[in-house]
Length: 413
Image 1 (cartoon, rainbow, N blue to C red):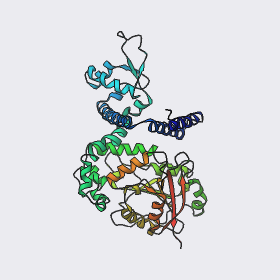
Image 2 (image 1 turned 135 degrees about the vertical axis):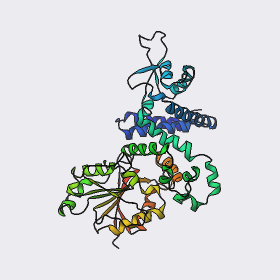
Image 3 (image 1 turned 180 degrees about the vertical axis):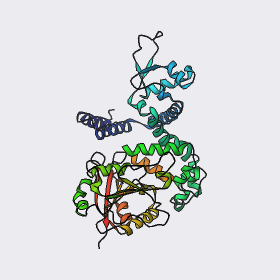
């Protein structure tokens, strides 16, 4: 009996493929449509088999990342199982078994045997999937995104729910991460600092993800160039930007560049903790950007007054409302009547419309484990309204509308 749902979704897929313009957004749409077809076809046995296979594949990939299998030969070249085995110092009889599964998953592909290969054994070439895991960047991203949660977050995870109330799960000092690592009483970042293995990996990975997740500038996002007249009319006397909790300053650099390359002559201030800005050997030094040590939970007021923009990029999703209110109230006290608060965050779908991308929901799951959450538009408006701010616009990235700049000002009535 024909599966009419799968056929309809396959026809939709063909339409999307014919309209493919090669952009990341279009590729994401096509991949989501493929997933819809799989879901419409599978029955319980296939569903169980699918998740079993994927779970075991994650374990295998994790092992191969640790062994260095994906770094055993450079992009553009090929290698035999014996050559890969020699590079990672594991017997070829074992590596060959791993490679069979990786081939079927699209991690590596068979390449024509080279003329110099006497035994004409299979040679392996990289694919887009294996290249994603190649090199220090791929290694760090994988280990922070997958290995860290597996090794630290999820151990005995169900016991956490049996031993903590709802209110306790929302306390950043009693998060699932802090509990599972034996560091209840510490926030996520302080608890992570105790982990000599994963702390440096996580920091490097977050710096890399900042380049790919939540665009600072882009079509549909806040139009930074429109601040020129406002800033130049005052001769650059007020700071253009305070990048609150801005990490290594990637957003500060991008915004300053979008504002004439020099912030329209006004100051750009990067605020974060000493362990971020002044870590030994990793000191942040950016031309045209002033560093300022600031802990928004230490009780001190926001030190930079009357800035044109107070900017938060993926900061508030780390905390529940009570902590966010503490952070935002300090900013509200520092704002001039014409100041803006801009939050670069995900704005989750509301009601029955879940959108088509599962990643934000998986990120929300990870945020639960560390004491935070992703919010809907209603939740963002309620949070900002609770501290005297009013949302005046939500600027959505054209190619990924869940990514947005939420623009707010002081409430006037």
